Image (cartoon, rainbow, N blue to C red; front, side, top):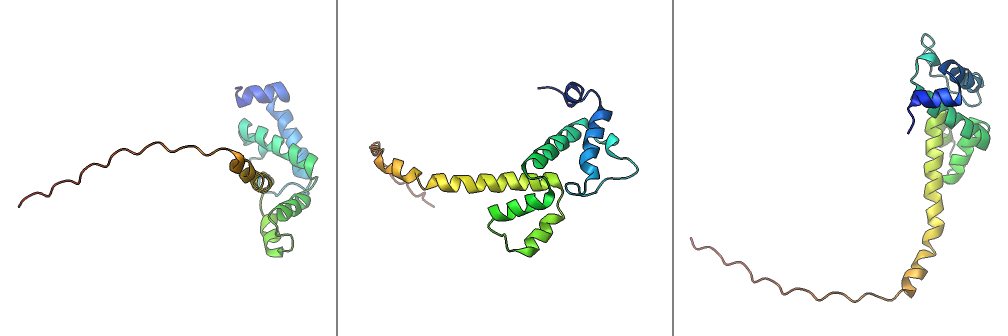
Length: 145
């Protein structure tokens, strides 16, 4: 496994280029919720966090395009599309948290369809014969006082 610095050097060349790539996403208010310390900026964030942020933003940009579309998709998966309070709460979340929430809700919704087919296979399988039980130990004797 490569170190974050090696990943940055292989993929982007140096940290400044990675920060420049991320700033393309941060200037667009469709994806970015500004919680950045203006004094420090992205240049003072660790390489590992920057690489994860870049991967998250590119995945979200390809799949949804905007935060609003991702929030709508999460609401659909959670079956809360009409819940305006839920949508307003999600709109305050940053993109990485929304992305994790989307992946988790997507994972939760997929196994529900597979579980309906699983009992049919279990019923067709022959039942195992239980092993004979060991003889029970005799009860302990009471102590005399």
